[in-house]
Image (cartoon, rainbow, N blue to C red):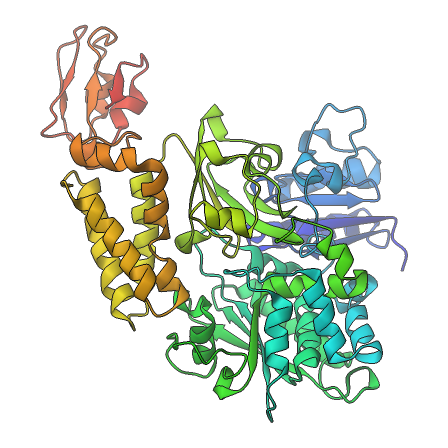
Length: 596
């Protein structure tokens, strides 16, 4: 059926939480009420990426992109835009007063510097309709591989592309596949890591929600390359939308003969099962993930042997994450030279980042490797809210480190991030401003690691707990001379002796903050002062007598009656009673109260 207009509505987790399903129902009802349901098609898509502005609705062919749409806005979009042909400027994303108000999605500033490969279909197709994926060259790469190429040729293409793992350490994908292809075995496996446990990370979830078939197709290609006929997708149960769409996609792929026996009429067979994880961070580590898939407690195993030789059930196994797989079909169709022509010499292609924290445009971005942090934060991310100063960015989650403001022009790639004491990780990027305390940030990430440690090896189980206790002591004003040296010694010993990669990288937030923000640690310990004014035990709220008008508003607002004084005379705060809630400073209309 031919439709004159298509209305694309974001159906990712973020927008679903902001009533996008209700928006879709409202569109369908009002289209029917206006007798244009056969002229306009409503499509539920995956995440567009610009989560801060969601729910997003895009109307084609005009390409008008509406942001922060509510169910109540739908009536105006239908009556004005879809019936009368007049774009609703007040909802338009971008420059509302531009001469040409119909701005296609790719013309919006947030998207201009992006190069979408892994995210190429997210926000463009209905992820629950396999035919829409096929219409965008879906499963063409699998057909090409099975009918025109040998397994060795497939591996050679992936090696030449320079694709490295997007889930953590950045190991060359083609090399991993080659290792797994060599052993002779009666059974081999292909695994997908969709566990994604880093705080603030949602790249893999969004790809599975917006383009699940790209991962399924890539896993089948990987199976052909290494000689496997079975795959497992390990996804956390906290991703209900992703799990639902994966199940729909797997069912459709089997119905179309794209999974199962004799795919494309060849002698190649491949099938995939989903395994739900219980949200254990350690199961993002490859051997712990495989142990969990086997139905056992998710704990890492010593390496060697490596999974390429002995993985699932002691059989040769490859494991890549969602984003890595999402690149595979495009590489096969466009060639390794095309992919390797993007990015830097040692970091090819693009990388998806989930940007969060103190930044205006939170959401998903996909940028060429080598893009600077400044471009990501200011050109794509829209800068820091309230004109605050950029202080640092944490990449790689609890396994990564902080990049300080004076390194903001560093190109983002594997080697540069490692040199700075951080890592690419899966792609979480948390932005911090001048109001963040770096000691508190290190404590936050270490608290997460302590809680998520599987407990198998003493360096991680005990060592991270001891580091956390020192950080807690420092932020509570009980720090003492020698604490910094103890932290450094513990961190280095844990990195050298922990069993798995997660334990080995757990000290990174401490080491990187000590490297770039040592003065903040020293201020906490020796001056009993938190420069950012975050650590409550080291805070004091004071009233400037010259500015205080004696209005008594702060005293009336104080929940513990710590403020006293006489009307029209300066008030004062009893520090022994003050609970440092900050209500007085928020209430004062004369700027007389500050924290020191």
